[in-house]
Image (cartoon, rainbow, N blue to C red; front, side):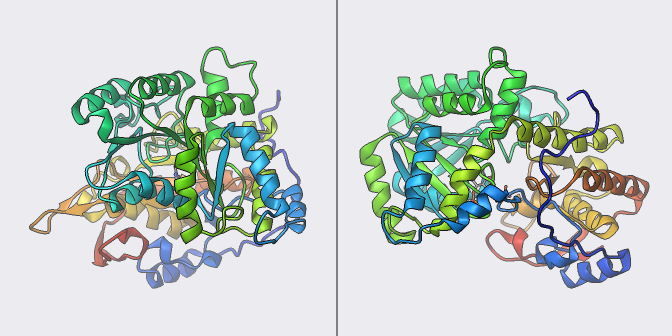
Amino acid sequence: MKYKTIFEPFKIKSVEPIRLTSQRQREHHLHRAHFNPFLLHSSDVMIDFLTDSGTSAMSAAQWSAIMSGDESYAGARSWQRLEAEIHDLTGYPHILPTHQGRAAERILYGYLGGKGKIFISNTHFDTTRANIEFTGATAIDIPMPESAMIAFDHPFKGNMDTEKLESLIQTYGAQNISAVILTVTNNSGGGQPVSMHNAKEVASICKKHKLLFILDCCRIAENSYFIRHREVGFRNKSYRSIAQQMFALADGCIMSAKKDAFANIGGFLALKNKALAEACTNLLIITEGFATYGGLAGRDMDAIAVGLREIFDPDYLHYRITSTTYLGEHLHKKGIPLIMPVGGHAVYIDAQKLYPQIPVNEYPGQALVCELYLRGGIRSVEIGSVMFGKYDKRGKLIPAPKELVRLAIPRRVYTQSHIDYVVEVFDEIIRTKENARGLRITYESELLRHFTAHFEQL
Ligand code: F0G
């Protein structure tokens, strides 16, 4: 389009009111939530950027598909529609439905894992890592070295370091490596895309050493958008065919349908290998449900089947990526330090750089998360030492490598005016940044403390 305004390629048929709150009210809510936005009531939030997972607005076509959901225990028509859709997209013959992405992870990595086993990824998402480590296996991240440089501009900063992959295979021996996992886009690395060239290199190394190559593909449509616009040779390819080409390189995939399938719940595991699929199906039946529903209602499977097709709509993908980039670039122009270039589903802010006066053990990321809520009613998430910090033997904090805050944007939910509002709130964040204060943890759980921790302002 030749116009500057970002045009949302949809009309709004059904609305959910947002309750506007004053800063005084939000102060009260934040105190009640112990300065942890995970503990806020969603009705007290004005713009919810906690996650893009399961928060999409479904289309009229998805809602009408829901009405034709077949709730039969076995062999439901809804399953047949979903299976056909996933098969057509991925080309994989064996498909196992699950209630969300991590259930597929638990099944596949639970089967392949165990003490002494190694998994290698560009970056394991937290649930992926947790499911691998839970079996006693080791998860090793090898993103390309440039990904550590927050402001460094590179078109495919989500790529895997393939030289390191070769050297890890030499170190550990191919027989001890259970799988190589390419996460597209690389969520924990900033929502950065992976190039087709990199996926081909990973595939050929895996083939040479007979290693299983799995795609964590929950944002593959967004990744395809970047390939088409940034990688030579894809300009005339459709987004769907680019995704299909990437699926063809791997031996299987795990998908959380809560992202690039516009569904509020769901996921799947799809595999080329029959024996592996049979072993996983046994685990699926024990914990998720029968092989033709895997923890999902028939209507959910129908919503996913329709969503998987809609997500590749060129007008949608253009709007989606342009809108995320718009937010990121406007914040960047104001001097907010960000992971650059801006990724597909979220903007990642470097809170340590924004608040140099707050030391890591006073959690600068959590301070920004609280400021964003207090000043604008915006809910975001800390991805730093609250989430990944550990303690040494003397109880001293071992900080995370970066102190980031993620603004993850739900799909088709907020309009351009909402995004402009968020940009304006950052003017106040900048104006008041010297006053931002760190926090002290007053309560924490042993595992995944960020969900439930209580804080006190210093
Ligand atoms: N893989 C990636 C790359 C993810 O981003 C997620 C979830 C999962 C796997 C697990 O899927 O939630 O359906 O079990 N990411 C969400 C987020 C939670 O906020 O980024 P799930």
